[in-house]
Image 1 (cartoon, rainbow, N blue to C red):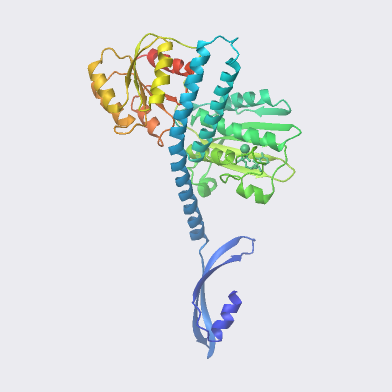
Image 2 (cartoon, rainbow, N blue to C red):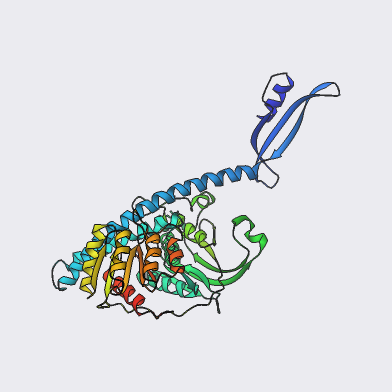
Length: 441
Ligand SMILES: Nc1ncnc2c1ncn2[C@@H]1O[C@H](COP(=O)(O)OP(=O)(O)O)[C@@H](O)[C@H]1O
Ligand SMILES: [Mg+2]
C-alpha cells in the first residue's frame, strides 16, 4: 500500500500526503505510524520527502478511552439495576425468613423456603459480580490480613471440591492491606472456580502469599503506585490457555464455557475489584501447562484490629429503632423482622420525615437504620441533619449498593455501621447489637 502510493505520487497523481498504517518492528512488535509525504525534486528528479511518526501511544490512549467509556456505561447500568434488584431480593428474603421463623422445621414447606433463600443468595452473588465489574460495591474497607482471607476462602472452596488438592504457602508476618474483605473473597473464589473448571479430572491448586516491593519501572505501565504490595498467586495444573484466549479473558462476557455454565463475568469482576483497591492482576498460562494468576494489593500503614466472629444466632433486644426507607416493601419486611426481634419500631418513609421524628423523639430513639439512596433528601444529607438534632445518635446505614465511596465517606464521618441489602434476620440482628453495644468513643 505504501509503495503503491509512493509510485502513484511520483507519477503525478494527487494523493493526500498524510496517512496512517501499521508496521512491524524488528522485535516483531506492531506499531502505528503516521506518514507525511511531500513531493519535491531531488537532484532534478521527482521525489518525496517523508516524515514518519510513531503514533502508537496515541492509538493506545484512544483504545483506553473507549474502554473507559464502556466501563462507565456499564457502571451506570449495573449500579442502577443493583439498587432496585437488591430491594426486590430483600423483599423475597425477608418474607422467606419470617415464614421460616413462624413454622417449625417439620413443616413440609421448610425445605422450599430454604431453597428460596438460597436462590436469593445466588441473585445477590450476581449483582455483586456486576458491581465488581463496575468497580463499585467496595463498602467496608478494613485493615486486612490476606493470609486469613486466602485461608478462609480456600477452606470454604475445598470442602465442596474434594477432587482438587489445595497446597498453601503463607508469607510470615504478612503486611496488612486495606480491603473490602467480602470483595477480595469473591475475587479469590472466582479464581478458584475457574481453576476447578480447567481441571475436569481433578488436579492441584497452589495458593501463595508474599510481601513484595514494586519499583517505578515495574508499576509504570499499570497506573499503580510504586511501593509495598502483598501478592497472592493462584496456580492450577489445568488446561491452560493459548495466546488468543489470554488476550480476552478479562473482557466482560468473554467465556469459553458452554451456555448456562459460564457468564464471562468472573474475571471482569475480579479485575474491577482489584483495580478498585488500587491493585493489579496479571496472568501466566500456556496451553496444556496450567495457569497462574497474580494479584497485587497495596499495603496500608494501619495496624489490624482483632474482630470477634459474630455467633451465628439471632440476637434480640428491646430498644427503639427508627427505620428510614422510601420503599414500602422494605419497610414492611424489615419492621416485621425487627418487631420479631423484640424492638419498638418507628417508621419514616423519607429523609424529611426522619428528621422530624428525630426532633420529636430524640430521647426515645436508640438507633436509626438509614437507607442510603432515597429520592428528595438523600441518605447522606439526612444523616447530616440527624446529626444536628441528635449528635449522639447511633446510625446503621443500609443499602443495596453505594455510589463509589459514599458509604465509606459516611462511615468515616462517624456513621456507626453498614449493612448491605438483602440482609437476613441473623445478620440484621447481629449488626444492630454490634452498633448498640459499641462503646462511646
Ligand atoms: N484457570 C484457568 N485455566 C484455563 N482457562 C481459564 C482459567 N481462568 C479463566 N479461564 C478462561 O477465561 C474465560 C473467562 O473466565 P471468566 O471471566 O471467569 O468467565 P466464565 O468462568 O464464566 O467463563 C473462561 O471461560 C476460560 O476460558
Ligand atoms: Mg469464571
